Length: 101
Image 1 (tube, rainbow, N blue to C red):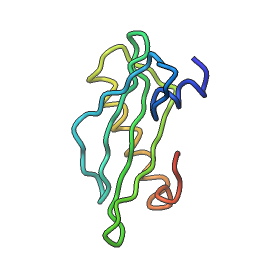
Image 2 (cartoon, one colour):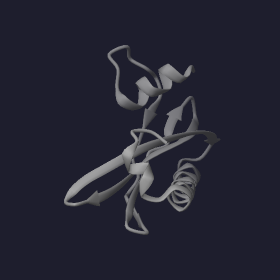
Image 3 (spheres, rainbow, N blue to C red):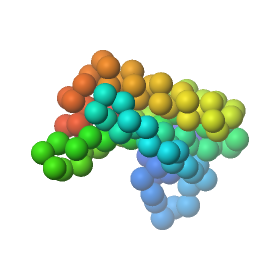
């Protein structure tokens, strides 16, 4: 799957991509909300999700996708949360100014 197809599968496309993401329950971490959204692609789950935070009453979010894959949904959710925490710890609120990190 090419990168363009991956983005289409996440953000929607009328072309009917086969990869699908299923959001897990939100997790609170250091004032941010993490929503793991592993992408099911042929029985493997790709690491993806979104990181949100309310700033001045406005909900801001950024998305992330990584090349890591897991064969189990719960392991993929756990890995998504781990990666999101890592992104937050390394980049802080600066991620909120970008659509994708």
